[in-house]
Image (cartoon, rainbow, N blue to C red; front, side, top):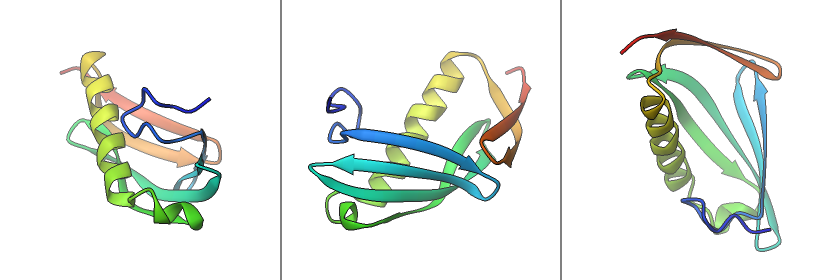
Length: 103
């Protein structure tokens, strides 16, 4: 099923893996595959993707800057709507730990 309702509406599949270095996301769209890697940082009370890069043939149809901007906006909105303020995060294999503060 295509993820048409998502802000980047063109993705067929998304598989996210948290690593000690950041995150790796296996993506697929229009029969093309790619991997998006980015650092995860606590910034302005939210979690943000930083320094992202897409590799593989999917780089031809998905601009990495647009992917990061859209993801950062969605993450920030969801956390703010839920009343969460992120002050710190740590990463381990398969795990992200967030330190929260009240707004």
